[in-house]
Length: 509
Image (cartoon, rainbow, N blue to C red; front, top):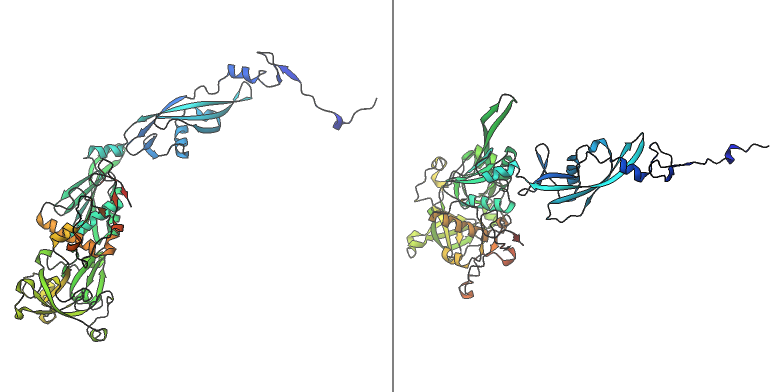
């Protein structure tokens, strides 16, 4: 008899009967079929089928135990990790798959389908699939609780501008509204020189300070005060204060620089006009059309203040104007930059209140030769007859002090311009104060600056004013600067207050 080779032999696996139901099955350590094994052993035992997770409806964050709040959208990986972390005894089994099941978005229920494996009855591997339901319960997080309390804060940013003028603060207000820099504030309190912004954490307060530093010339200092100290855990509770000092000059101010600062700016004249306050202070020499930019570090190293307020400016009428040619002004221009957007000119003006008196005509130089014509009205500072207390001005030679410094052209009467103005701005409550007539006048001047300076409007949200009645076209002045309809935004009224405290909230371009 010939023996078969080993390669020709085939291995036959025998069947056994299930010890419970008698169904033929492959041999396994439990000697039971899958159906009977599931009736005898439940590997999901000990894993909860219904779990509660906490959600803050104000900031829309979930509680990640023990005390961390995380933001997670529906059916996201972050929410899946948070839900799996809430399941007890899940580490005792092997997780194979997990997926979300659809639920009604407003049902406050989240369902997850899980597939797990575990070793049972002497080495048999059993896999089961089950559904866990998560109930979303409301719980206010500590940050939102402090916001609702209105009085609990850990950091404050005190913004101050130590001057009676408010133009720069009006500009700061619009920056805060446009970029939403105060969205993390737990409270805002007005002050006679600015505002106090309260925050729950020091980091959020520092973010607002950084915003101010990137937008306007400021300097700041900070301090902290110990509130409590836990000896057992060695923890300290501080309250932080950030003092932000805004430069005390505004647009259209006449200033007198120190000799050292004027020399470092390329020999610019000491008597200058502030043309803009943005990331730095922009000044212009009316005698030479030379300009310079002074940052916050330079300003506080060589500080200077305004020689006047807007109400101290005198109204003049242009009697004659002659532009100065480029070749004629090279002899008296310093080493600094010269503006090519402006035209230097000799100007003869007379006070509007003294029109008809030939002896009252005054000669001066101005950088507004490109917009001034005979008969135009301008405002300027009468340095010859005004009483100014300034140390740098007193040390100057009288020959170098001009009789009149022209600041700004007057296009139309303020009342008429306000009536023609078909746009508006949003305001923050109490900032700046609008309870005095002088502040209202300065706000009208700020609105006029927006109409005359297109670059300034880039950082301001301007809205259509549907309450204004259109004026007759016959009364309209073509030369008066205006804001085009394309630059205005529509304010969508949704019947609730927005972050700026006004009715209506969203902004549509």
